[in-house]
Length: 350
Image (cartoon, rainbow, N blue to C red; front, side):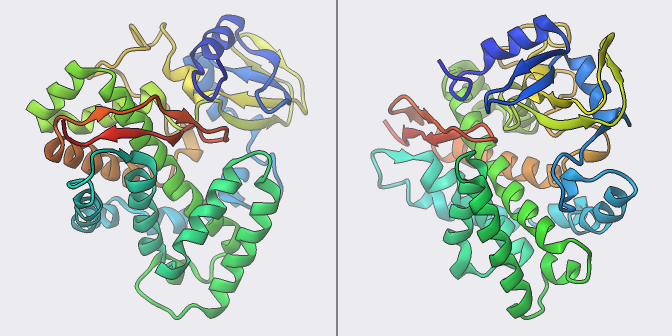
């Protein structure tokens, strides 16, 4: 079984080794950080730089550049602004699920998990509706190792053209128009702004269908859904393998010295399944300690609030409208940097 379909054995092996030099799934030699406490330490360590890839993209910069780039983006994704999107997200959710009413079987990914967040992030940013299918295709190619480089070039060219032709409006692109590194960071915002939520909805719903007691508990008490979203993010978040860093000096993590210039991989998925932090970590259980599914420290996901709101609305509406939703076939996992499902077929009604 591959790491894409079930990363659990890899998580267990990485944690058992402690910080150690391993070959990652993409064939790189990297120091793997996988224990929860080590991951938290690594994500806050000033000797581990995020500038693994040059170019000025927010997630690949360090202070003070990172601080300067993040401030206007964080303002554009403020909690107040995200909360104001709830009615529109609810409308999009219900419109998509209306199509399920007459279907015997549907693919959750293509009919719901992708269309919901891509519509939300494109409306928020100001990406024209006519471009959204192309944007989704480019994002998917950007997530796959084989097509990443070519897709980034196409994506950046598209964003540059959009900036040159787009009329000002009440949207984030207009708000950030004069900010530095905007092309790179719009590629990041568009991609991360929906890819992670696609996989939260897909893998989260799969986990609920495989845990009928938890599913029924949420149907009986929808007020538990925000807590369930946190647990689903912990249990099977999109950043399973991890985030890359590079050591700018010798760094000690978990009592192990990582040499200067080493590539380091920080596994959020392994940290979120650490039995020293979470009892029975491979099962769903509400009310756990906070997770690191959105990262930790200065690079904590700027779109976390939006992802949570979309997850709450998606799961709440799905369970309310289709309480007898059932798995129709074994799902197919994709091979990509962000862990997620390629296909996931369900029966909306008995």
